Image (cartoon, rainbow, N blue to C red; front, side, top):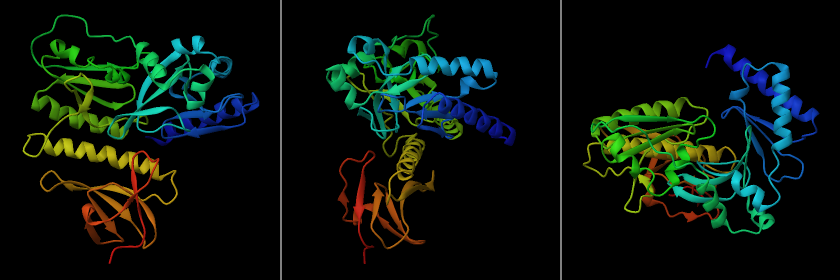
Length: 347
């Protein structure tokens, strides 16, 4: 990203923060990685997320009108009847605060947000008490609000790549959570559908053709690496029940190395995001090659207690490497992704 663009983005964030604080919102933070502002409105216990990309290029009056709308509609509804139509499911690796969540895919969870035109707010367990509903009912209502859209037009019969780009309302990547939705695209893409969701606003679907899928792994990794809203470089298919699972490519499969690389890139990113906010958490890095195989290394940098990410191997200090299975480590409760507690270095 060029210097002028970084400066413009930082200035916009500062203007938004100043206006929100003048409006009486005390807790406002800019998150540069996602190019968004998070703030907690009076009466809420969960941050509201304001994407800043739609505000680029707006003048002062337009910005003021937009923020006025945000402040007027951003609160979480107090009753279930008002909240239910606004709920949407989202697929994420991590989310601010302590929102309601359930596992969906490796390193990814399903969350529920209250969707307003300009903002979204994650639903928390506290809202379940306020609305007097169960978590399952909240997740079911959110999924039911997705349009479930499918492709239109006549299928060509040949494998193709279809790109769904989110306009802010479609929640395309969330459609992967709908059982059977992906499989219904088989005729349109010309075979068993394979989906990529490299960033929150982009869903790529193609047929299970080795050459097409290999090319999309490369494209998805590039989008994932460059996006400020990265989601996953992995590919997904439907299982027997139509639920998404990671693209299977065991040893000997022609795509084994590219799938292995994508799996580990996702692990590295999610573990390092977690480590940035978790005291004592060790980092993770990717090592290897297509020829030798891809591996993850947990970085135990000193002979001190540490919370280690689950990895293929552990790098102790600068040069000593041990296979993961040789370490006897205690699991740590309540962490996602999971970690193990390590005390002193092994002899």
